[in-house]
Amino acid sequence: MFVCFCHNIIKMNEVPPFLENEIKFLINAIPLYTKHHNIDQKCEIKTSTIHGNGIFANCDILEGEIITLYPVHGVCVCPSGERGDHARLGMVGAFDIFNNIQYRNPTIEDYHVYGMNHSKYIFTIGYPEITNGFIGHIANDGVKVKTNVFNPRQKQIYLNCASERNNARFLRLNDENLHKGLKGIGQYITSVTATKNISQGEEILVTYGYEYWVNKSHT
Image (cartoon, rainbow, N blue to C red; front, top):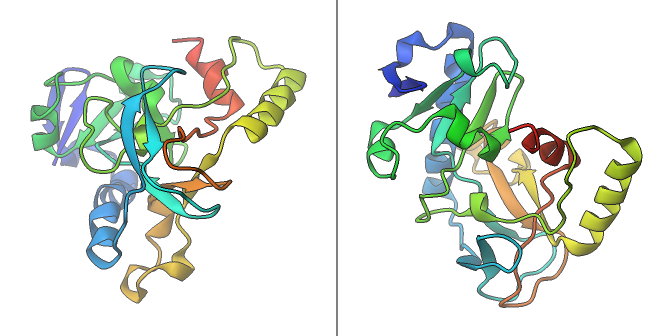
C-alpha cells in the first residue's frame, strides 16, 4: 500500500497512526462485502444531457433498492483536519490503480472535488477515469448551484429542487442487513440507493449537497 503526497509516493507507514485502521477498513470494506453479498448493479454509463457522462438505469428500479456502490479507488488523508490544506493532504490507494489510470500520480488538486467524506480527516475518491466495477462516482446531481457564499435561503431552495428532481441518494449500508462476519463495516461502504421508483433508461440523479456546490466554486 502506498501514499501519494502531491507527486511523491511514500509508504503507508507515513500515514498518522491514529488514521491507519480507518484507512484499512475503507480500502477493504467493498471487497469483503462483495465476497458475501452479491450486488446486481442496476445501471450503466451513458452520455448525460446534464453533464458529461452519467449513470442510467438498465432495468426498472424500486424505491429503496441499491443501484450501485460508490467505489474506493483512493483515500485522501488530511492530518490537520482541514480539507483545503493541500500541502498536508495525501492519497492512499493500491499502486496498480495508479498504473491503470491516465494520471500515473494523481494529485489532490485534480481529484478532491470527487471526494466522499468519511470523517474530518479522511475522504475517499472514485477516479472518473475508472469506469469498470462500481460506478456510483459517475452519478450526476440534477440540480446545480453557482455561488461561493453560503446562503440559508438558497440552500433550502436547492434542497427542495433536489428532492423533486433527483431520484437517488448516497447512503451508508445498514449493518443489520450484512453477513454476520461483517458487522461494523457498513459505515465504510456508500451505496447509491433509489429514493423513488426509477424506469429503465432514466438517468440516476443523486443529491450532492448544497455545501458541495459552494465548496466547488472555490476550486
